[in-house]
Length: 186
Image: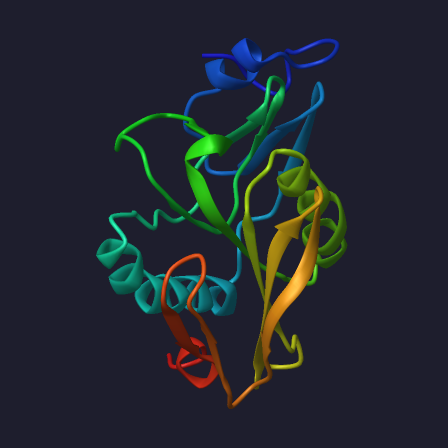
């Protein structure tokens, strides 16, 4: 198994995969590693509740909703969304973007710009058709809003929005209804 400390030069997929499982969230982006801190308790609770909200509808559509899966967007680009809804085999170390129907990111103080910018652009470039962004208020996490985007002409456009206290509903990419107040039920 490789380590972060003894590596020199750009990272290849082989180098990245040789790291194996780590306690850090480490993503590969064009030869560089993107290392972010472990999510805080609020983030983890929102992620679990979001998965609980999406999972029944995903299963009805014959899809799965794994938390923090490794998704290969292109050669040399493996990102780890907070949640994905996808088809394809279980147990794969890395899933292909072609199997992913929806990626979900939950912003946090350390990654807001990355989730709204870099990752959103990378997911769009990989052709992932839907992107769900959960945006909590970081001041004691009293509220969260949701923004669902759909891919059109290589870029995401807003499809549906739910402010705190509202439900995000959509029939695409599968029938879903997410209560924003439930996301903070912990």
